[in-house]
Image 1 (cartoon, rainbow, N blue to C red):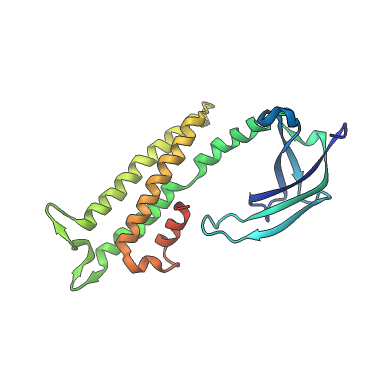
Image 2: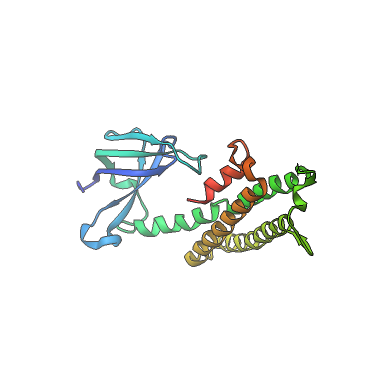
Length: 220
């Protein structure tokens, strides 16, 4: 601290949207003796002297947002750029993290897998018969069971996500519920992606199809 400003010296890794953002929110120690209670949130513009971007990372999944490393070398940040109360940055971060957890698009990924896999099973033929009829065990086939499982998982996740999001819209934030949503939806979306791979077999290896990309997005 320099009275009316703070000096940042650090490196920040895995910054979502880092290569593209004009403004950053940076969390830094302002009271080293207070552990997690001594962290403050700062608003930092990308053209601030001393701020530079290191290598941009090429991710396996979630490729819709770029990530990179930022280097802070004697970055002078005005005191007025503190976001929220001093030494209360953890609360700022967690409030935003709760909403980010709800933004994860697991149900959308499940829907995309189903939208691609189900029509494929209806039209794809092998050994003279439709794939959907393979390995018939009364009263349903193996592929029909997978379609039912995928549909049921999606149907269970959507209302859970929507109910928690509706509560957040009304100001009733619950970190436990938000964490529960991402846990439950991500686990089910991973299984739906795996089932989609089973439905498409070798076709799922082709990157231009959604199934392989969905698996990469969820299984990480």
